[in-house]
Image 1: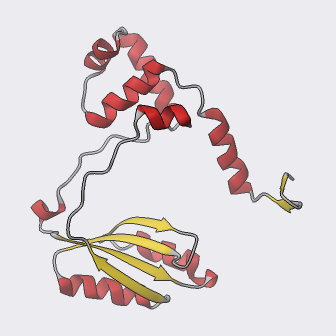
Image 2 (image 1 turned 90 degrees about the vertical axis):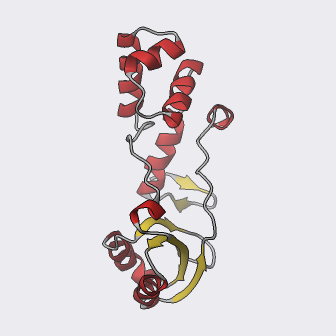
Length: 174
């Protein structure tokens, strides 16, 4: 068993996380360019991607496959405007609970379609949930369901800016 600090064992999930950090450093400028382009346009064809980075289609396909296998690229998705599909209210719901409810909460949140993001936190709050709903009444029912597990605070989102992509500078620091 590995130890840190004053001999505290490292839990298995932290060991595997450390291995991931050790294996990420092999990005070259071409990999980084591919990642940047794909973050801007996930529907780009492999041949167009290759043209932009100066590689043949087979070489581009091979690099893309390697990035997918390493888990660097975890998927390709369409971005949906919640307001355009009748879900015009977004809120952040924070929950402070006890350790005994952590697994139950994770299961409950995964079954709630209104919860589109779950962050487990350190500090005073245990969870930060991003919720989208059509109305205040629906938000109230979500808050009531979450409040069964502890103290809840809620903030209604006035505006959401696009998520920043992981850029070249950040990848080079990793």
